[in-house]
Image (tube, rainbow, N blue to C red; front, top):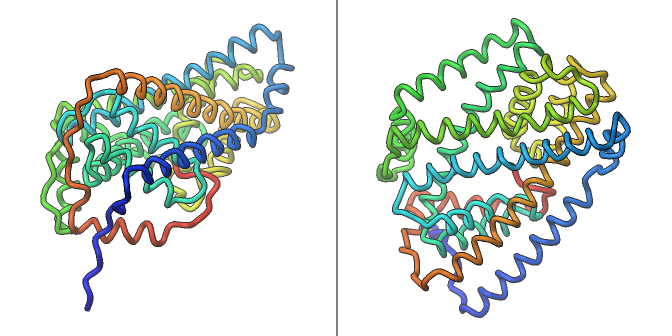
Length: 351
C-alpha cells in the first residue's frame, strides 16, 4: 500500500504567494461586504420606532459595544491558551493569526480558509499542530462555559427539564479546581492519534482562560438584553434570561456543525427564549437584530485589529518569528483529508 503524502503548504515562489495573499484579502473584503449587505437592516427601523430615537440610539450603541467587548474577551481567552501551548508570540502576531482565522469563516468554501489559516500561522511563528491544539482546547472551554451560563435561560425556558444541564455547572467547577484534567484529556486524544504529548497548559493558564471566556459570554449577552429592552421588555426580569439565551443559542448553533454559523438555529432558540418576556413578533425582531449586531461587531473589530497589528508589525524591528513544526505526522493525513473533503462553497464558516 502506498503511503499517503503528508499535507503541507505547497512550495511556491515568494512572488506567487504574495499574489495569492492579495487575492485572498480581496476575496475576504468582498465576502465581508456581501455579508454586511445581506443582513436584514430593516430591523433597525423597527427598533427605532419603539420609543424616543435618542434612547434607542444609546441602547443600540450599547449593544454594539457589549458585543465588541465580549469578542475581545474571547480573543484574550484564546490568546492565553495559545501562549500556554508553545513559545512566546508577540501580541500583534497573535492578533493577526486569530482574526485572519476568525474572519475566514465568511469566505465561501472551506479550502481558502484552511490555507489562509495555515499560511498566516506558520508565517507568524505558530505551527499547525499548535494552532490545532489551541483551537481544540479553546473550543472545549467555549462549549463548557457556554452550556453553564446558558443555565440562566434554560431554567426559565425549560423548567425541570433543564436539570440535565446541571452537569455542565458541576463540570466547570471541577475544571477550575483541577484544571490539569483538561491537559490529561488532550494528551489522551493525542496518544490515540500516536502523537507525543504537547506542552501542557498550566493550571493558572487554564483557569484564566476559563474565567476570560465566561466573562466574554456574560458581556456579549448584554447586547441581547439591551435590544430586548429597546423592544419593550422589562429590564430586571429579562437580564438573566437574555444573557443565558444568547449564550445557549450560540452554543447550540456551534454544535450544529452542518449549518454555517448556526444560522437559523440560533435565531430559533433566541426567539423561543425571548417569548418569555416579549410578544413573539418582537422576539423575532430582537433575534434578527442580534445577528446584525454580532456581525457588524465581528467585522469592525476584526478589520480594526488586523489594521493595527499590520502597522505595529511593520514598524517593529525586522525579526523573523521562530518557526515551529508545521504539523505532526499523525495529523498530516487528517489535514489532507479535511482539505480534500471540504465543500467548495458555503455562506460562512462556524463561529
